[in-house]
Length: 224
Image (cartoon, rainbow, N blue to C red; front, side):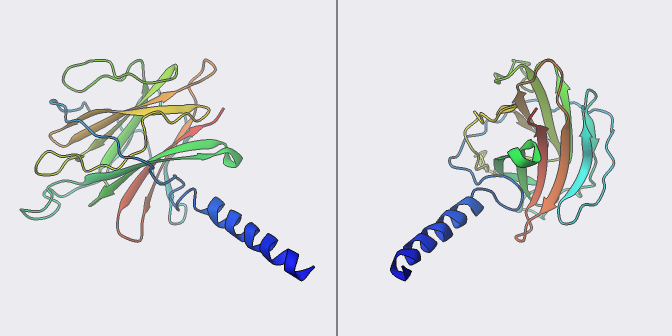
């Protein structure tokens, strides 16, 4: 009997370890591939502030569950340049991650920055458009969220993308996909495609700091 239980116990340990590794402490899964970011050529617009931060341990809520029909803005003071030349002048986006949390009733997309946390705003829009050209950004779903950061960038001094990201098609029950919408003069923007049952879903915003000093902004969308 002992000889039969050892491999069974080992198998359980391996399965548990695999399950624990599917998401990191930000609540998002590690990216499986890199999606390129494209620079666009006009600055983003500004929206009124509606959010007030509240502490929640290492990860803190900055906008509680609500429907941001007017953009919810969380402001941070960023001293520019972030590092003296030839260092980076602005917070740099280095990673996008996604994670699904069925037991907790939400799906998450996270944006990780090297340098301080930029200001950001999130709100529902009729259509996400590319900064500058106004071209509609193709997104899955029937409802769209605009996510904007400033000051921030997603490219290095040579104009190359700095972002490691999952494929744009997310495919969770309500959070269906993401797309870049602009990266110019300190304004960085994205669109999220959401599938609803006719009414906009509540969202939640939060922040955390990883052990390596990377600052993370999370956008949570209700699963239904």
